[in-house]
Length: 402
Ligand code: PMT
Figure 1 (tube, rainbow, N blue to C red):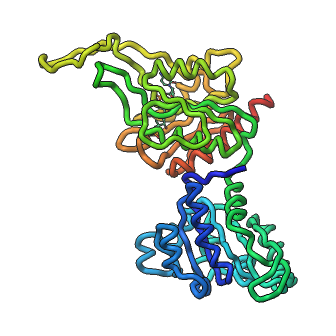
Figure 2 (figure 1 turned 180 degrees about the horizontal axis):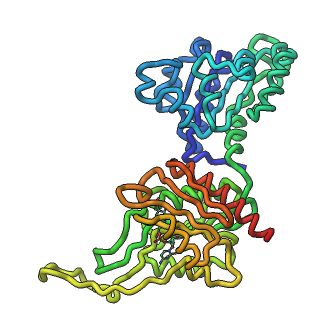
Figure 3 (figure 1 turned 90 degrees about the horizontal axis):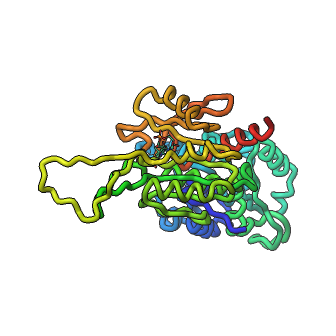
């Protein structure tokens, strides 16, 4: 199965092995699948391959020192550890595995592995006798027991002339295994329908009423649900961000279009995520020709649009419903009230206004589940989406058992 790494931030660590010549190929393949890659190298790695090569293929400066004045001002080791969605050490030498297994953090790479909360994977590469040595095997067991993923090694002829286990597995396999780390399977077999973005409510042929939703939150949730194994349909208002790959995308313009698309589809779905900032009102009459500014003031008569999530909530049977509440004041109270009014299972409250949430790359949310309420810190929407999908999957499953 082909995997995708869209919007994933991968930190590739390279240690001193002849197999380091394969690292640029790993970077290239990661980027091909949509990942952003940063590279950190040990001193010994630089004997086998130059930082310049890795800088050129990754498109980012290479990190080499634990304490680097320039790096600390921009992206020091703690920021780098926080930045990563996954840390991959390829190739990983016997020495590196030993130091990591023993919690030694005396250089940039070992420090990053210990400082990060992201999953860490190592792809070992070493001489067959070193690989078979009981110390290496003991370190391997320790790493696995500490939840560090180990990719390979494979067997074959080695640079030193030996034949046996210890060869780095191929870049294509490494990238495949890495991408599986993001495939949680928590929504495996489920069908998820998501609305995203703003709507445009026409005034005349060239003007419309809209809002600042960019679609980022909804698109990130669609991507995360797909990674969790769901089959996803995204109904999106007009946005300028790229459509996620391998997701059915329906483009709509107005709230009425969105309502019709959702109501046509929703009976086939297990989960409905209402992330769109739907226009609550539309013009009662849309002018057929451009309105000219010959009057000092203009009155627009507006009428209510249908409430999409509310209409889904009225269906019987209905899917598991998750809505968002965008508020500028009394956010949590308003969210709880909305959840009840619109018959939603979960609601995710975000404070909007002042540049927060709408249009931004980050969001700060409070999640109201079936029985618990959790506030999350400011997080990139791509990362937050993965957390939310895991929470939604748990809540969905617990409702099935009720
Ligand atoms: O797109 P981004 O720039 O990433 O911004 C994300 C976001 C701020 C738009 C998103 O996180 C968010 O809060 N979406 C809901 C926005 C909204 O319209 O909230 P609301 O409180 O007005 O509506 C409550 C719920 O009813 C929402 O789930 C909304 O999708 C739904 N609704 C509202 C009106 C309507 N006519 N039909 C609906 O389904």
